Image (tube, rainbow, N blue to C red; front, side):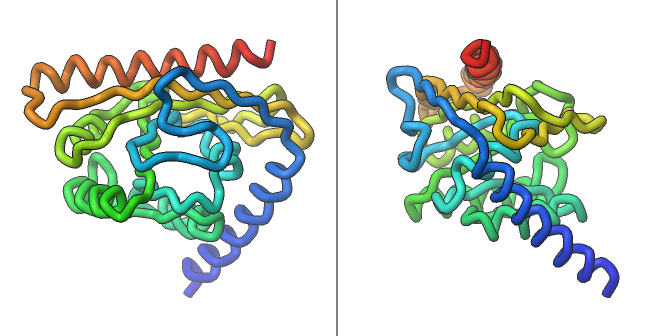
Length: 216
């Protein structure tokens, strides 16, 4: 009963705070040629990767787009799942360590229904800025392209967590940068997947660097 109460309280408070702070942010957007999304309100069905620390500004920016997002089965994951559901996302439960296979099946089903599929590439436990291979595995299996993006914030509170989570300060500038699409052939070998995984890592790093550069 205590956990249920905490989940209810935390999810409603988090939803309120994301909407409140997000509504004050001043966004600028830049995407590479061939990006599957425009950075505003349109995102074609595909696989989108970003770093865990920019979850709060991303949750606000892409709210109500009915994007599926893989979230771990932990208590923290349950809090996040309930919060993002209120923001118009479609949580799919599982992670690289627990329930990964069933979660990939769920993500493929979401793609087939026309919803974007979103991965926090270094989640749920890090290391920070090290991409997991799940997005590449899903892309080969489901036949969808991968795009990477990052949202940088000019002023933010930084938590002392593994992901150095950013909580944007009200009225900050925020910059969103999206990469060109990466295609994963259905007949890709394990060696091909390793190379494509490095391409995803490079696209994530480039997106972060460019988003941060836009604020200078």
